[in-house]
Image (cartoon, rainbow, N blue to C red; front, top):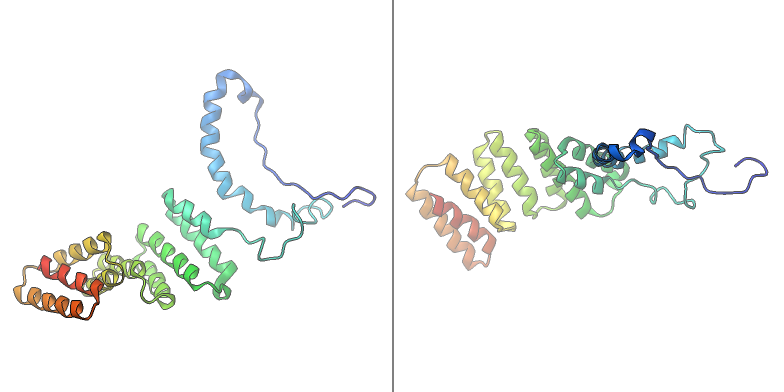
Length: 233
């Protein structure tokens, strides 16, 4: 603050105005501009404030707007931004946000469940844009944190199938169904088996017996996976 001036926290903001747009006949165009521009500002402009504090004169930007939070409190919500971008279909942007999350948290993040979720989400981003090798790598990293997570196994199944690694895709989807026998995982497993195998009575019988064994061992998810393969064959 300037010497002798009252102490007050600096406030940052973005103001968009245009005198012509204030006219009634321009209301429709103004609404269109806001609808397209405001979401973009939410994802970009408000992220540069931290950098601005390093550039503006100290008397104008010498402290956070509210209090003096620690570094942990000032971290950007990169995961939330990534989730929103993914839902909007902006997969490259979402992947970038998830990467920024790791840049701020990295291996120091104590919640392994959250780490696995971010890796799985980023794997989904890479799959959406056709980067299947990167998707598979992230899914494997997620499994290192949550070995029994069906969603991560399904990511590997999809990436493997897209890269022509049929047997690995089937194995991964069987694991996905074993840990999470959801309709989506069951349908994905059936689809991959159907694409890669013709009718095979012997293999179908073997999978049925594997399912029976799993049922006797109370491994119901594995039983569903085996019966799914048997039914397709």
